Structures are given as structure tokens and as C-alpha cells.
Image (cartoon, rainbow, N blue to C red):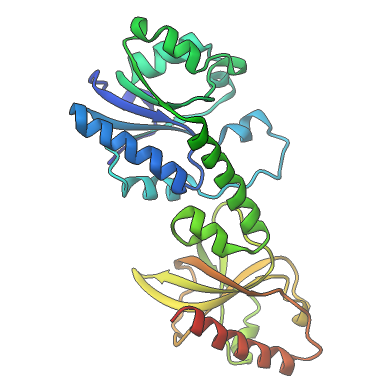
Length: 308
């Protein structure tokens, strides 16, 4: 898959099968659309193109809203899409100026001239152009003029996709990662550098990697203890993770600390990926370090059974 960060870098052939959207999470609903795109592409002997935008349009449209959290970074999204058989991923910079394009300009400048769209796979409710003035009715009415064939995604499919996105975010926020993972079709994950913390875990026999998530807009699950898999140096490990403020040891600030089973290497500064498999319990404050250690041992046993 080729990735383009500027439309000018894409060489339009006039045989592109295109779909467009934010595709945050690239969940099972999105995958269904992408697979249809790939099928149509093979059928007509074209080239599949997925057009997306970065930063997320809501970040530009509502810059004062600090509550916007995303399921995937642009790198994560690209990595997932690359595995689905797409030929070209075009990532357009979403700016205030771009949001001012009329629907006519969007079709002519982006879809027709920029991408050379032959077939457009689009939802019944998809809107585009300034003030979201353009839609599928407009495209169908003028498809002959633009020489673009429209492949419509039904109301039911779109509603399933919308419900999935909402459900996934709510599930992650509430620690219901099994539901999120089912809708994503894979474990929810995040990546980050291992940074030095207070190193208290070592003193109680459970060394942890303090993972600093790379992007502040990445959605992190609610505080608690989770069974997880860790990808480090292209190898997979099992472990547990605590998300929270570590109240028993008077922790300051929210952290993501991972204890990797049967592992004791120095990995400060390295990047690891955490795949969250299942929620074990809420974060709680214990009366003593001894009680905390007892609970961590129990958490580890539970995690090992869940990860078996």
C-alpha cells in the first residue's frame, strides 16, 4: 500500500475506486466497507483508494473541545488499513480552508481531478463540502456529468457503523474492553515509550514499565487493572497493567504501568505496544503495601488464566 500525505503526490489514472471517511478505529463495520471496495476494484480491474483526513475534522471544527479522544492515531490507522488490501491511502490535511470547499469544488478538485475517481463507495448519509451541503442525492443527480459511478452503502450498514463507533468508545471508557474488542475485531491497543517512574514496583517484587502514550488524544480506558499482551522487540509477552493514580503509594498523576510476566530486562526508552485483553478490577486504595502485594499476586494469577 502506498501512502500519500499530499493530494498532488497521487498520480490519478482515472480508474480509482474510492471510499472516504475518518475511519477512526477501523472497526468491523469499516472493514466491511473496505472489503467491498477491494472486491469492486478487482472486478473492474481498477485501483483501490481510501481517502481520509488528518487531523480529525472535529479537532479543527471544535478546537476548544479538549474532550475529543480517538480510537486510533494516524499511524495505527494506516497500519491496520495496509493489511486490508488497499492499494492507496491518501491522507488529506484537514484545515479550516479545506472545510470551506464547496461540494462542487470537493467533487471536481478532490474526487475527479485529484483522485481520478471512477467508482465512489459512499454512505447514504455522507455529507461533504462547506456546511455539509453535498450528499449522495447530489452525486447521483450529477454522476453522469462527473463520470463517477456511485456505490451506495445502505442505511442499515451505516447505522451499524455509527453504533459501533459509539459503542466502542463507551465500552473503553467504562472498562468493557471485551465488547470493544469484539466490535473492533482485534484487541484495543496503544503504544508508547517506557519512561522512568518512581520504580516502586521493583521494591515489592513486581517491576513495571511506565508507558507514556505518544498522543494525548488517544483514548485510554478507565482506571483499573487489566490483563494484557505486550509487543516488544517484535515479540509478544503476557502481563497485567494498572491504569490510574496508584492511591496506595500516594501516586501523583495518571499512569499506565505494565508488569510483564517472566521478564526483567532494562527497556527504558524503548517503545512497546499494549493490547488490552480484559478488565480485571477497579483501582482501589489498600490499607498497607502488604495487602497491595497480596492483591497483585492474585491479579497475576487471574490474568494468566485469562491469557492462557
